[in-house]
Structure formats: structure tokens, C-alpha cells
Amino acid sequence: MSVPIEMYEFANEAFYLAFETKDLNAMSHIWCEQGDPVCLHPGWPTLIGREAILESWRGILTNPHQSQVSFFDARVSLINDESAAVVCYEKTDDQIMVATNVFRVEGGRPRMYIHQAGFCAHPPHQA
Image 1 (cartoon, rainbow, N blue to C red):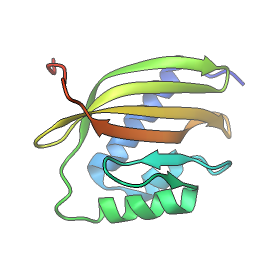
Image 2: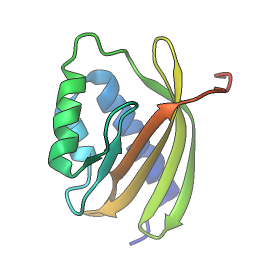
Image 3: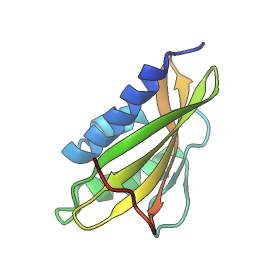
Image 4: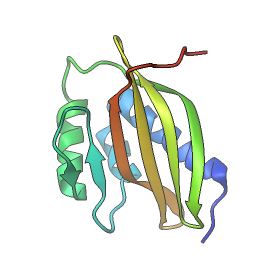
């Protein structure tokens, strides 16, 4: 089932909104329930599987010292009729990182299957 590119943009925005508002319930609805989703937080070991990923987000979202995160310059690249990659930059209080978010259609809507964020040696200027 093909979904419009705007739905991938919306899913990416929903991910960062859940991150920004520290909403674990919303974060849970963003991640795929089928297969073995993957998450690579900067400096962390690879997390495979929904349970491990949501446990990591529980720790991040309940950490009172966690920096606010926003995103900019998101670009969607369709992979096939049921998946797309969104590459964007993440801005925290003191750094800019680059992120790749891969979404696949599950239950008629894009859900996150892979999230990888890492340090960016030469970050762009934010518009």
C-alpha cells in the first residue's frame, strides 16, 4: 500500500514531537510493532527489537537532564511503496547531529523501523 510522501514527513515530525514533549505513549505508537526495529542512539550499543528500544526511550524521556531536541532540514527518500528514509539534522542545546529515520507502512501508516543519530563533524547552518 503506497502512502503519500507527506505521511512520512508527518511521521518524522510526530517522532520529534514525542521526543520534545517526553511523551512515551506517543513514542510507543511511532515505533513498528512487527519485525525487529533498530535504534542507534549516539554512543550507545545497537538496540534491536521494540522492547529494548522502548526501554531506552523510557530512560531518555524520563531523564530530567535530557537536552531538548528539535530537527531541521528533513529530506524524504522513498525506498519502495511501503518504506522511506528521512534524513535530517537534530539540534540539542550544544550540538547538531545527523539522523536517519527509516519508516515502513504498518497498519496503513508509516511507523519507525530504524533510527540512527550520530555526531556531525561539519554541521550545516540552521536556517
